[in-house]
Image 1 (cartoon, helix red, strand yellow):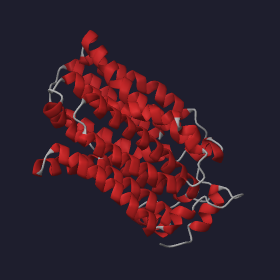
Image 2 (cartoon, rainbow, N blue to C red):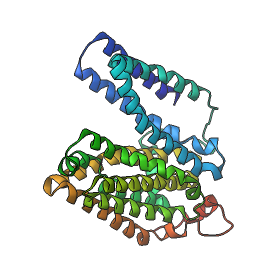
Image 3 (spheres, rainbow, N blue to C red):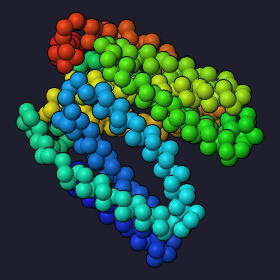
Image 4 (tube, rainbow, N blue to C red):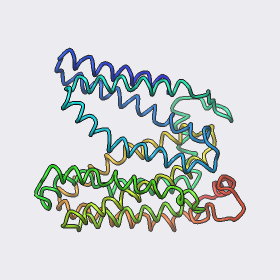
Length: 341
């Protein structure tokens, strides 16, 4: 993380430097964006391995919720701040503020204690990646959690449909488009207020399938909505379900996974959480081009609900995970990990 955070700081500084120099080279912007994305793809999984080492096991759900709230607050506040700074002082200063802000982040990372793997380190390379994937495949609860998230994001991601639905139903106003984009994030903040009760749910794996179904139902409802307040209500509900889903999935994954495999499993978690939604937006756009944006949203939401319903009987271990009284989730998960679907 120190290396990747330092690299991201350098990239941000180069962004600012090229802006002040007035280079106006599109290829350079693409190159810097690609380098930043590469560093973030390494930084994200590494960052996620720290949580179980920094908080007690019973506080892992709260830690996952705190991570989600920081994400949604950034998503809401960041663009507004960038727009305000750009309007007041120009893009150059906006880039400069971004670069300077990395200093605080880099300092906070440097202050963390050393956290080598507790049960030995895996040798890096392709075999290590394959070993991590095999570990997930051998543990039906983990497999089901990732499949449920894939189901929700591949079929139910609605963001690519916002401009077309806004133009067709809400007069194409930029203000309403902004509200649609903010709806999911606002729902995420609502979901954060439920993080306490979500953390106390015993059967988190089974509960995740319910929240995925709620997400799908809300997206289908958004596709049917023809008035703005109802569309926004459906998006807020979807955002709340999404945040709760991530809390459940993150708690289960962090609890089950031993330290030796945590980096590999968190890399898969990062790809599912950060990369697959883009595939979902592509799917939504492709279906919309063949049918209509409304049909794409409704069919995607219904498909997400159907997927959650199929995963439940396909992986019986999901229902049993966390079910035994008097057992911690970690101990229960260790037993259930030995069960194959």
